[in-house]
Image (tube, rainbow, N blue to C red):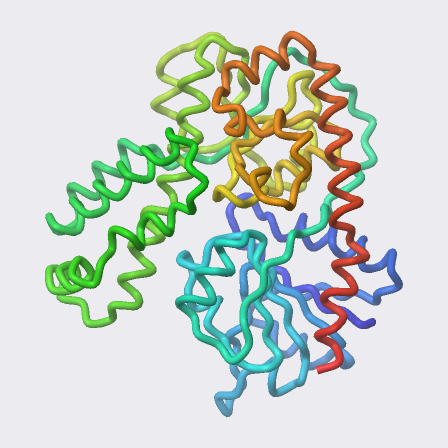
Length: 388
C-alpha cells in the first residue's frame, strides 16, 4: 500500500515530525511504501508530482479542507482517501472537522470527541472513535533509569490569568457565563464525576443563554460562538488538573517541563524544579526517572500520548484519566489512574514506597494495551477505506 503522511511543522513543540516518523516505521513494518509531504506552500505541487497514493493520513484534520482551483476538495478530486486522526477536541479548529465527502474520514482518539463531532458537524458518514495503538514504541534507548522524582510534562495556561483575561476583555454576561461554567467543571472534577466537561458546558449553554451571548457580542454566527465558548472552557479542565498536581505535591520531588509555570516557580519550593520543554523528538529522557511521569489526559475518557510514550520507553506513569471506568481497560490497572482511587497523595506515597512494584505494573499495562490495541488491527481498520 502506497501511503502519504501529511506533516505540519508549526505545532507547539513540533509534535508531528515525531508522530509521523513513528507511524511511518509501523506502516513500513507491514509492507507499506510511505512518503511524508510537508503541509506548506508547495504541498499541492508536491502531492501532484507523486504517483497515486492508496491512502493518506493527517493529524487533527490539517489539510482536509484544501481545494483545487475549481473549488473541488483535493482528496475527492484526486480520489485519495484521507484519514484524519484527531487527538484534540473538535471545538478548537472547527474547519478541520467539517469536510464532508466520501474520501475524508474523521477518526477520534476519545469517545466524547467523536460524539461532539457527530452532534455538531453533520456529515453523510459519521465520525468514528478508535482506541489508538501505541505507535511510539518500543523505543531503543540506552538510558539508565535514575532519579527519585516524578516528572510532570505539561504546558500551562494558568487558571487565574485566564479568569482575569475573561473579566478584562470580554462582555459582562459572556465573562460571567464562562466563569460560572469553569467553576462547575472544576467542581465536577473534584467530585471525580465520569462526565465529559463538554457535556457540562452544553447543560449550561441553553438556547436562551446562547441568544443572550449572541446579542451581547453582536454576533450572528452562533455556530462559531458556540465552538469558541467550548474552546475557552476546554482548557479549564486540563489546566485545573495540572495545577492540582503541583499544588497537592508541594512536599514531593517533582520536575516540571513546559511553559506557563512562572507563578508557581516564584514559590521557591526546593522540591520542585522547572524546565523549558524542547521538541517532542528530544523528549525520551523524561521517561527514565524512578517514579515516572504524571500525565494529564485531555478528557475523562482519553489517554494522552505521553502515557503511551512512557509505555514505549518501558517507563512508569500515573494518569488522571477515568478511561478505566469503561470496558476498554482492565480494572486490574486501576492503581495507575489516580482518580480511580480518588487520592493522588496515596498513589504517590505508594509509588515512593515501592517504585519497582509500580514500574512492573506499568510494564504489564503496556503489554496488555499492545495486545488489546495492536497496530495490525489499526492497519486492517484503515485499510477498508482504500476500497471506496
